[in-house]
Length: 217
Image (cartoon, rainbow, N blue to C red; front, side):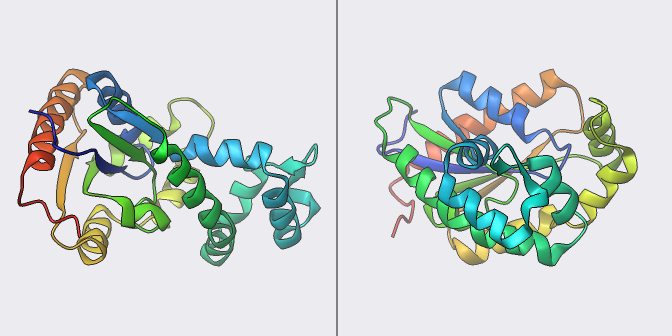
């Protein structure tokens, strides 16, 4: 079943949960996927006004070749929630604007998935008709997060400690978007099981989008 109108799905999950893999499967099933992390990368590379604001807030030590250095910023903000909040205050308005531009582009897809680790907490939550929340056991998250060798287990644990829990994300979404559906996607098993789960949730979400009882006010 396809929806009578284009629906927007928020896709979130904490470090190592596998939300990017879920996003890839959603794209394979026919969704248009907007990767907010890529949106941020593009803005940091191309938006000189944003770069200037970040330099003014955090100093020249976070700049590399005239652009914000993501690694340098990460070392600051992941150790200090107040610094993370300061960065988000600068980034969120531009991310929201850019996402609105991407959503306005014509697409034949029946739904758009906006993938972001803080979709519920950020400016794009007001655009969402439904939420996909990817969850996995903490030990599995750490194993996945460290598999590439880019961060240590200790660093993964520090980052996970400052992220809101799946329960907190669901509660906040329900408070900010009352009446909208939430699907939890368990990614504690293998890829085949995850693919099957995403396929089922995709069909359920399309059916939900086609329902005349969906409150879109």
